[in-house]
Length: 309
Image (tube, rainbow, N blue to C red):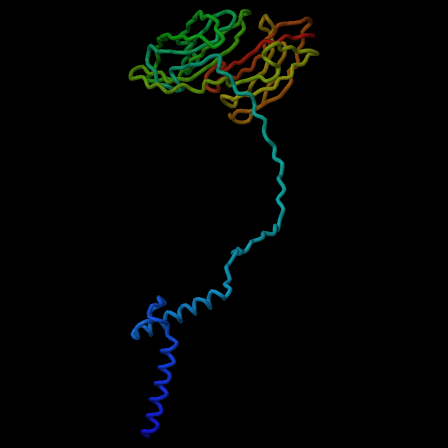
């Protein structure tokens, strides 16, 4: 046993001697050996470095594009646009030749009634204002000379009246005449006349003309061969007949047509009016309607036309 131990010691001494012979001289500036207590740390760091080297040599997959599913719609039906009828707008109605600004329709008025209006006077430059009671009797009448202005002339006046009861329905009627004395325009409006009390004034009604002629045109209207073609629009007051007539300069009727309107909505019409003249005649084409409660016209509209035989 001792012999083996001695042999081991001798071998160890020989190895140490060999190692000592291989060591560099003391003046060598090579790396300083780590202390023994650092060996575990060195081993760990060496292992990590080796692991990093191995990982660096392993190729990695880098995504270059993310694919998004695309939804493809397959049409099941083809829609074909269906042509529609686009209505052609009619010319707008002009401002009425006679506008009653105050009182408004069915206002309650006491005597004297204050009347304000705007009027396009005719060739005579005379404007007639009538106030009738519900039995048709004439309560008041005034004639005013009004200058002729294309846009209308403002008129303000007072109309005294007397009623037989506490209240009575009446009608204000305003009319203009041309230089031949023919009625050129007329407008009626009902009011409630009070013997006593306070005025209750309603707002002005529609200021547009109730009738419009599209044909014949207002400017240079000419008819030939004994027939006038009339196209236009009218807003009836009531269900009374609507009359189209042609008056010669003496006021005689030389052409007549009765129009049938259903209801009181605004309506488009087209018709012909036969006439008979022996020479070129400056006539008046007239549309009018009666009141359905009081005697007389409630509305009249006209325009000049030249009639050729």
